[in-house]
Amino acid sequence: MQAPVMSLSPDDGDPLSLRPPAFETIDELRARMAMEQRAKEISDRIDEELEKARVAERKGPKPIKILLLGQSESGKSTTLKNFQLMYDPKAFRAERASWRAVIQLNVVQSIQIILDAMDRAQKYEHEHLSAQGAKKGPTYLTLDLLEIKARLAPLLEVENTLIRRLTGGGSELMPTQTDQTSRAMYNSSKQGLKEIAINSTIPWKNAFNRLIRSEERSSFDSADGIDWEDPEDPWPILNQCMKDMQQLWDSPGVKQLLVKQKIKPDDLNGYFLDSISRVAGARYVPTDDDILRARLKTLGVSEHRFKISTSGAVRDWKVYDVGGHRSQCPAWAPFFDDMDAIIFLAPISGFDQTLEEDHRINRLEDSIKLWTMIVTNQLLKNTNIILFLNKIDIFRTKLASGIKFKDFVVSYAERANDVDTATAYLKRKFGGIMQEASSSPRVFYCHFTTVTDTASTKYILSNLKDMLMRQNLVKTNLMS
Ligand SMILES: Nc1nc2c(ncn2[C@@H]2O[C@H](COP(=O)(O)OP(=O)(O)OP(=O)(O)O)[C@@H](O)[C@H]2O)c(=O)[nH]1
Ligand SMILES: [Mg+2]
Image 1 (tube, rainbow, N blue to C red):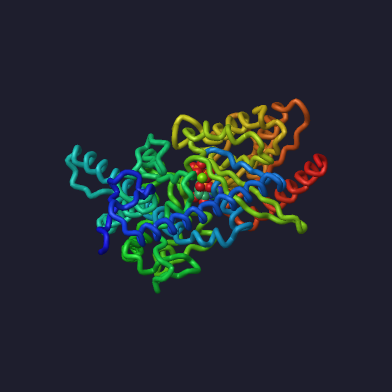
Image 2 (image 1 turned 90 degrees about the vertical axis):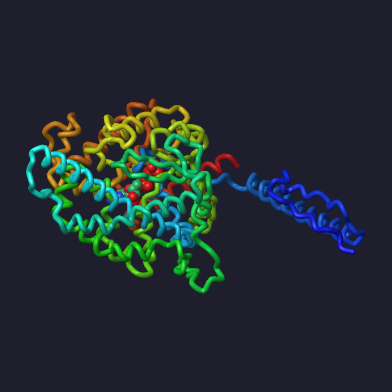
């Protein structure tokens, strides 16, 4: 006679400690004991392998470690993506499906910023005009634009769906702004935008693996990891809204409105808005460049491992990416110890912007403060510090458009408002702070970078790799 089957419900306490069934035949007892024996053997084998790996790690040369530092949006994660593209392209490309969702969200949120600006203008004009009793229609907002705005209403739902999927699911995971320990957070300060951040201590794919369903599905494109028949993919709605989004972005009225409301091009992801027909087109697969442009705020610190070879020697590398939001800075210090190099990113294009987390603080001034903090830190006095004066492309465009550097940097005085003079000034400023902070001469490594440009960044990172490998070799030889 078969014994009654016991089923474990989730409420039965620890589901991992399987209690023997209350009624068990001899055969069942033998089968269970054999199964337990097999499970123990597997577990022992795993322990052995782990121990072997630990011993091998202790015996082998120490990995080369790099820490990426800088304020939020300085380009740390983008620099990390360059590392991944250079030294682990397979893994980088396997994440395309996840980045595709981030890009869709970047597009929808940029459009949402425009729609919110239109809302504000509508309200203002309504109140203003009705106060005067005027019957005139809105000035910036033509009837055409208002119709487009109404047709784009479904994007709000797309935004919510994408946020829910990217942050891992149900509403119980919907984080609060202040909950730094949660896996994600929203920042509602950026023009009302619910910017999401994924906690880097959660392996990156875990946040997105719901997007990758089953490799057996016929619709699954294994090269890109995109499930083309995923019913939750917002692609059909984006495609349906494509022309309206394009018209909105191209409209001179909207451009004037953005200027009037002081919404800067940096607040919108113009790169994707300029490519809307591609991004919202059929079977859109992000290019490497698209992935580098995708914006996802980092929370916490994440470690990324690479195997990198130079002249036949293969070494383990660890690159650490941190969140640059002010609330995240206390998490940096424990990583200062034992780093071979720090890449410090200062986004110089931020000279006319303020911090998202505190609108009283100028972004460039904040970068200079952080830089001072890093170069004066005693734990880092022997660490290579490499400065990336980043976003030089945006810096160039801003100066060319007539924005005056001296209006934001008083000490720049009457120097010429051109890129060469301004960048030379910045290099001297940052270099001077480092020399002043050092009791003995210290090499000042400084590059003007656009880390979204893979070709120039590859060149810089590969020189950095050679330098660190050489230094490491000398150190190892001296010690042996
Ligand atoms: N145009 C331009 N955009 C850049 C450059 N570097 C980074 N970006 C963009 O700036 C945005 C922010 O870059 P991230 O690398 O996410 O910044 P981060 O320092 O990791 O920011 P946190 O995670 O918030 O600390 C992304 O959309 C990037 O594509 C650059 O040199 N030029
Ligand atoms: Mg980041």
